[in-house]
Length: 255
Image 1: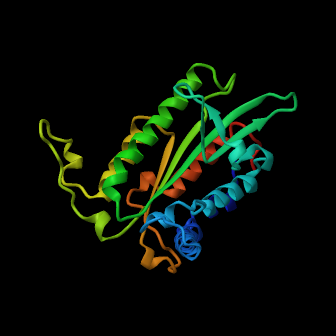
Image 2: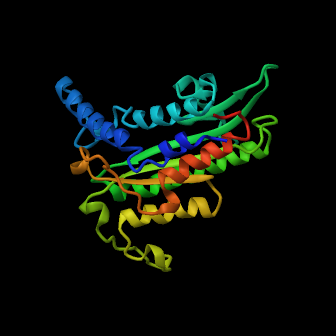
């Protein structure tokens, strides 16, 4: 079992604060860098196309896994190492994998993580795309698992982390378009913050993902010791990481 010291680390109220701060700084530096080079990305897109703004989340999770006893060689984060076969497509590149390597050469898929972010102002243009993407990716993976794509691997832990900008626009009530039938009550005039909240809840309740972590972050508060919020305890970072560690206990002799 994971020891109390590491669990206390996981339960720290500001566990992801460094990653959130890095997220905002990286996006700003990417936009400035592209402007200096004279590239043609417009508006907020210049902050998003550079990538790597979620890197600190990867490193925090990777460090945690190594600290509890997962061999570093079993944790895959490099682009060339994170492809998995799909069922409806040849392969998909995930964000972080844990693949246990046995002495006899056998491999077991232990955990799969997807980490995403959403910053304004185009919340409306992206929320449906993001939802379709997260649902499709999970369905593809579970179907591939059912069909034996991962050999004799037991059921992997599948996690999804979403960081959403907390601002006036993301919290504003959004009118529904209902030309024929009404949307579910939870989505009635709900803000993007609440729409994403309901989506994340359903991903867990319908067992599409093992766990989901849903974080809100206000750019103006990035220098605070605790610079993000968690609108639902059942979607908190602590629950997400504890669940991952608990699953890994089935495969490794953790510290």
